[in-house]
Length: 132
Image (tube, rainbow, N blue to C red):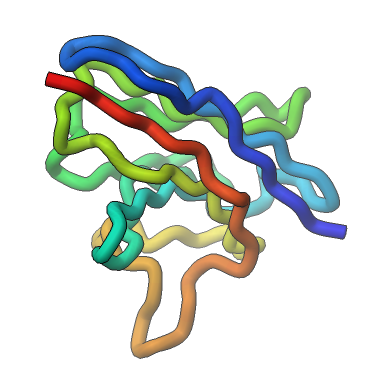
C-alpha cells in the first residue's frame, strides 16, 4: 500500500528555519517525481518544490534561495529545508507523490494539468505557522 506521512511542522518566528520530512512506503521515492505542496485556508493547493527521478529540482519563485528539497534514498524519505521563513509561508504543507519520473518543473505551482491531477498520493499534511 502506497503511503506518505509528513512531519516536522510547527510554529516559528520570521527568519527562522524548519525541516519537513515525508516518510514514504509502498514505493521507491527514487523512481518518482515528488513534491511539496502547500495550502492556505480558502485557497487552492499550490506547489512549492519538486524533485524528479533524475534528481532535478525546481521551486516556485517566492521560495527560491530559501527552501531546499532533497531526498534520502536509503530512508525512502523526502525533505524540505525551509530557511528565512516569512509570514507568507504560513500554510498546511503536503507531501505528494506522482509515481511517474517526470515533474512539472516549468510550472511548479500547478497541481493539475487540464483538470488531471499531477499527484496520485498525498499525505495528511503538517502545519507551518510563521509569526512576524
